[in-house]
Image 1 (cartoon, rainbow, N blue to C red):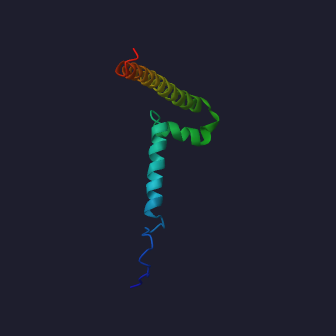
Image 2: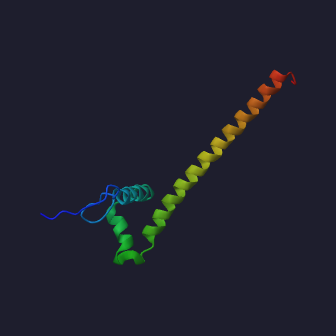
Image 3: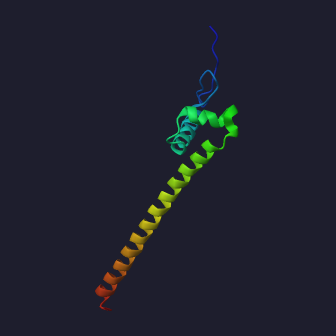
Length: 102
């Protein structure tokens, strides 16, 4: 039997030489990609990478969906900012009332 001596602080690697940290990063990257590509199945995405990549319609559709998500998020941020401003104004009125400045 052949054994390989490893130091006590050596990272454990699998047969392909990938460390656990590399695999975790790979999974994290894949999750981010899956989030961005939501609504696109593997077949549609493979068309973007294969010989049919000349067709820009798929890319434009993907970008349109991404822009729609960004637009929805920006509207949500605007609404949240308005609520925060409203709460700050309310707090200022309460402070003035407590200080007897009203």
